[in-house]
Image (cartoon, rainbow, N blue to C red; front, side, top):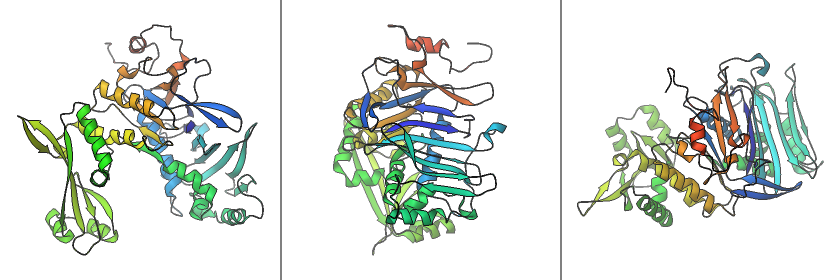
Length: 444
């Protein structure tokens, strides 16, 4: 479970902002949290967190910072390349052009802190720590000094002295030369088969990040291969009054080169596809699965949505469906996935995009109900202020995002405000009591 995340100097985020999934100390609300058995005793962690604020406040920047950190951690970097970090454009001298990403999380009975600091060229700091009965202690630390010299210290809590993994880690730390300073030490450890690094890196790999323009590329194939999943999606769409009463998956095989000629594909795309044995490629808004077999290398799989029109069954293609139905296809797999998985973390940008309030409320309420005895979490952004409802959410699950006078995005939880029993929270928010609302010039 994610417990805390701190980020600085990324897109609209300047100085550090901190997001926490710990319940507010003052809260007496006994809903929607999980008690964790840690080395330092029982800790509580929330299952949901929602961000609200005006357009351009930085809600998406926050999710994008997570996506950048996740990608930088799990994908590795080529030697000699830049880091690709997108920093705050309003320069602050005290940030020294350094961006920081720091995670505190619970994994397999332990609490870890992993973080790194970098500029556009190289990593300057990196650390992995673990919670003991009294404190967080280092497993490894990495620091690059003002002369460009990098020092990495590996502690016994990461690997015992003279163990095979410790000897390998010691060799790897010496390999961080000038052209590898853009690489994370954690990834080098993982890439060389060190199990503890693999465990940590896989926690990041399992973070699921969904943006409004995200489309589940494997969805048609999964619907074709998993009948339980197909039934769940079809029944959910029917239940949620989308007009869809059933789903079918149609496939068609044809020769790749005939297809390439018909689609007038550029040579670079043809060459890229020729290099892969199996893959999914998006072309003109449709997904094509390329397979290496004797008869054909191209399979087009399409979802067919059945409606009842004038008492007849009529099939629609994906592009014929409403934006809301298409958005549900991005989000409903979350509810199916958590039925058989207990350690999933989802970050969803604009969960309410193209959805009626009741549908957004349904998704979030079902997630809470289905995750009651699990470690699953969902963190989302939204514009739909009707979700600011203390009957369905705790105060400390709701966060506001707004920019200060310097254009920096800042976070503050609703739990920072004193809410009287029976007070209309939505009305108080819209009146500007909590901030984080659009200020329309000339008044409104």
